[in-house]
Amino acid sequence: MSVENAPVVDVDEAAIPVEKKMYYRFESNDKKEFRVSELAIQQSETLNRLVEAMGYTSEDVENKPAIAIENIDGKTLKLVFQWCEHHKGEAIPVDDGSVPKIVEIPEFDAKLMDIDNGLLFKLIWAADYLNIVQLLNVSCKKVANMAQGKTPAQLRRVYLLPSDEEDEAAKRAAQEAQDPRAREVEEEFEERKRQGGNSFF
Amino acid sequence: MFCERGELKTQITCLEIILFRKQNSFSFSEEMSAAVSPFPLLFLPENALRESLRQMDQLSLICLTLTSSRCKDLVTDCEFSLSSIKLTHEEEFNTFHLEFGEDAVCLEFSNKVSASYSSAERFDDDEEVVTDDDAIEIDNEEVANQNEEVVTDNNEIAIDNEVVVTDDDCGDFRMEWENSFSLKDFIKHLYDTFLVGEFQFHLCKTFNPITLGNISDDVCLDTVMIDAPIAIYSEADINNFLSRWIRTGVPSRFSYFAFYFPVRHISENNILEGIGFEIVPAGTRREFKHYDGDTTWYKRFTFFVEEGYDIKIFDQTIATLTFSHQFPSLEMYVWNKQ
Image (cartoon, rainbow over the protein chains, first blue to last red):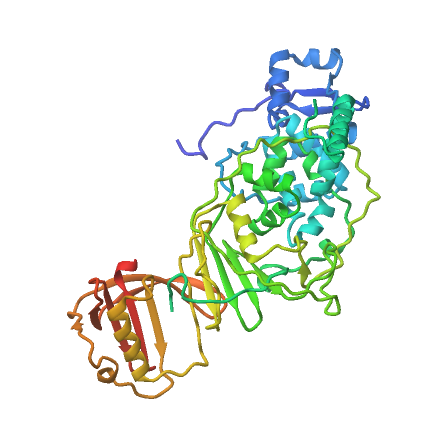
């Protein structure tokens, strides 16, 4: 039977069952609430497992309190969910272990990450905590790109890298804070050495 | 000409290294020159830190390892490899071109050094000059990688966005080295920090002296190339060189030789006078690999040797001589060095 000859049937569109999209509610540590689609949540392994374990129905989502994400603030979480919504349904990349790892930053992601480094830092922490592989990839790529064309001295400033001396001083300070007596013993030992003593005890 | 270790003698004065990238591989963008707030790399979660390192280009990684012991250890722990390192010395400019993968860097060893180093300052010719000599000592044995445990601080920190880094320097940069940082130190640093598979060392435009004699055990030199465009040799000189090589086999690691005669015609008879040879049978096709290119950047080439004259040295090592008369030249391929 040709397409032209097929019987025409009137369809009541309202009668067709439409699968309702489920939107989960999340709350940041500064009490900002977000509604995120089920498909977008799949980009985050952590959240996906969480909602699966909760087994919420559509009614539960509306009636129960929003799921709290205690260690991410609203500004960062907004970026995270914007990213997840834009990339919902995309396959999660599998790491092939290559070095250097080749990652392209899509235009949307580049615009999303056109933020100050403080927020980028929080975004990476969030991507790591929520286990959003591709968001972590692109955000780390942005961090890696900061090193391009920099001398070691410039890298120190760009990445706030302490020098060996600063590292050593910080280590000593940490040791002192942990065990003041150890420092006293060390100073006493140095003093005895200066005085020519061979044995500490 | 590829020569044996120990044949060439020089001392390289290397108190300071200036780093700049090959122009076509790098240019400063407007974004880079804009003021940016610093990013606390070491405070990233371990996974993200490793990802960031993995996505850096090789030169950035090298520069990062030069910032502090902690960064060096971080990179070392990741066990990254550096693809095919090539180091080319250009005597004319006293520069060393370092290539790895698609990245390239020029290292300039200078006699000049300031009394105190500061970070990323422009090179200033008026600075106090101190000279020091440091012979290259390159070793043959890879240094065991450091496998120290990487400690990362996962505590979130407050970021001061008011601290501004301005990248207004472009062009040549002075890298922040220890005063005693030499070529040897640099090469050893690479071997300490990365997995280095192959290392090529080329000398350009020089018969001067790079001391390869006291090469010790850190780095294996695969090739040394000497390009002497000013020197003038006669057919008799080449004949003399071949005769000596056949008698003594020195240099023993010698593997390829190309000579272009500054005359219109060459006589194969004069060059081969007194030298025993066998004509390579017609239809013979042998593959020979070596490094060649212009005087700055070397690429790997494979030659197919299909004609010429086979000669033997005292230990039965065979070499093939081929002549070209269109552009009078002689090439010599030593087969057991492949």
